Length: 237
Image (tube, rainbow, N blue to C red; front, top):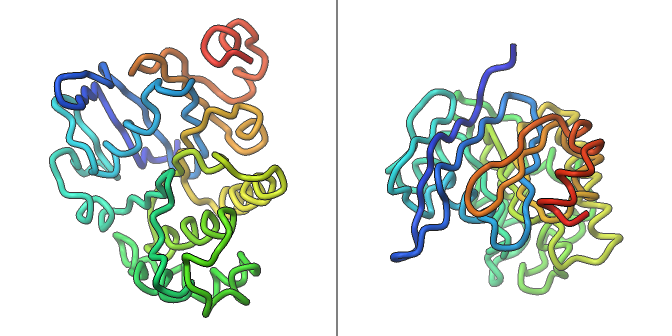
């Protein structure tokens, strides 16, 4: 049985006095690509930010490789093996592509050193000729590729992708999908927060649906594909 990389249980998260997550729970096993699906405002990004340490849960627990993470700072959680790709990318616009990558370079929690500049350029050949270009001069799709590559440079145990297809042209979305498939084939553990079910169908092996701040469905992606009632009720597909 695969080891559980990430486990979140009973998360309750507030923005001020407004509660956004209500007992949110999920787990991701080693090698899984899990899609966290839901409508806009369902709590997907809040879940991702909470796992990454950018929001503090009022209640609940988060573990990475059985190590408690709740209450820890974001940089400590990153060192523990969580690579976060935010929805708004947050690259360093005044730094070159290569500097963006080198800034993030570190060994994994157990000394893993799989992801290097050379391996990144080999897997993402479109970044290599852009190595000296400033991040702020990249297109949206190039920035998204760079942000994913930057997360990999930290040799994470799990990669969190928050709305990776949002606002991108169809051809770029296709390239992002191909990259995620490549990462899955290499055994990278991934959690994708997405509204776009069709984007996830060919990428994920498991799916969870979040609605009004709690998981209302969890199964294989094939079971979800066949469940028209659930898709219509929670994803309007």
